[in-house]
Length: 500
Image (cartoon, rainbow, N blue to C red):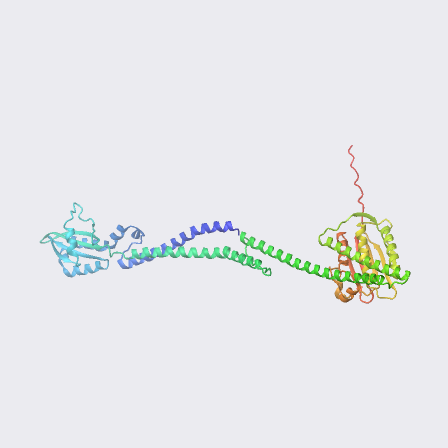
């Protein structure tokens, strides 16, 4: 879920959820208060107007007693002089925070509360007018609502019964309701706020803290960790991108370490391989300078040896230069269509002369059609052949040394097999011989010379030609290199459409 969508949902829920919860809480509290009012004040109304309208509430609280008192005053006014009846009636009123006062001909004949005298002093100063049955509100120190019931009986011309309701003591549930509502509002707001704080923390702050920890690790050079990512919002995508960056940095760091190691190996190999011919050249030159050479034949042999060692050094330096071009993908290629038969006829003829001088027999078997062609760089393909043959020559150990070339083809590829009868390659080394700087037998490789990058150059050139190379070898019997290159096929021109 997108972060913008979460914010919209949060906005809506923050409005709807508190209102919904508050409504549910208010309904529950008011229902509870209604039950309390009905139980305490013996009201029979189920209307919520009792809680909303204070006048309705006060009128309903003592309405039953007021109606009963009116009927008594009209039908049995003598009962208002009966103290037992008045005490019972007053006890019923006291349950509803009210009391009774009876006045006859200006004299108080019954007082249901100790403050009756003060209430009467205020009532005598009120002009009722024509509406004697109206409710009277008394302010001041005593908040009272008074209902009057006038009556007459034998010997009494002016009698009045007062039902006095103490507003300050009536319906204490109002204060409780207000407090409950206030507490409910606070709890709802705290609950909703806590829920959304936890949600926002989990969705936003927690990933940011993971990112902060990740940046700290990267700053201190630690790239071996994972960033756990869940979700599909913008922050999760940022975490994934950051983790991808970490992986790329780790790969680059590992690649840098690998290249640095390879460069150190290369420098070590080149240093050793250069030291050998330089030491030989130095020795032969010192021999000439010291007059050890006492014949023209010996001088010629010394000079030829010096020349050969210099050629070995030149070859090694050229190989190193070419390796640097491989490392930066700057190998210069000049691709052209070449005839396979003509090319390998000339190549094997040249190699045959060199191999013959070293006592190595060259066998050449060409089984491809005379007009078969490939797309290749002549010089780089020659480098491939020379590197493979040079590698075979180094590890010849048989009395009769032999290198064979076999050329064959199928519908799509030209196959070049170069096989020798040398020492062969150990099974554990076959999978690594095309790796840079790999030397299967370090002591033997050091003795034979070589930088360890010849076959890696071969594979690079063949790959760049769109071909394939593989190796088969049996230890003690020899090694065979198999090269496959795509044949060149001319596409016949499309016939032109003639519109008449």
